Image 1 (tube, rainbow, N blue to C red):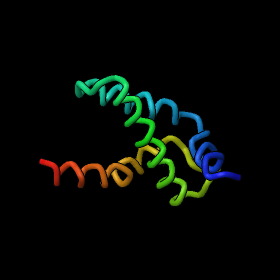
Image 2: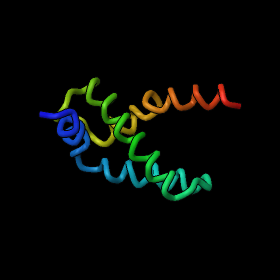
Image 3: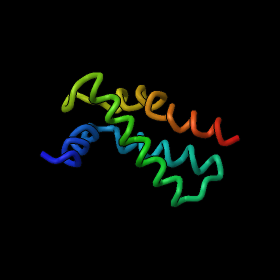
Image 4: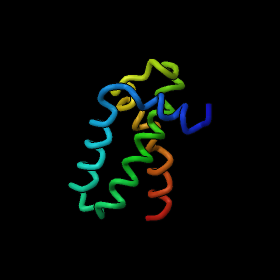
Length: 85
């Protein structure tokens, strides 16, 4: 299948929608623009899903795996931000 269909399988586990909602809520609580918060959360969850899938394999990724992968998935963002400020 296409890269898109593989990514969708990685995030098809129960609870990954809750991970997305939690990310959006966290960003909104930090006063981020709602559209930007939604877009950033989708990208972060997707990247974390990729990281998690490499750890446990596609088809076996759970929401908890995605949560545990968030720090690694977000690390490049933190590095870029530190360079900006």
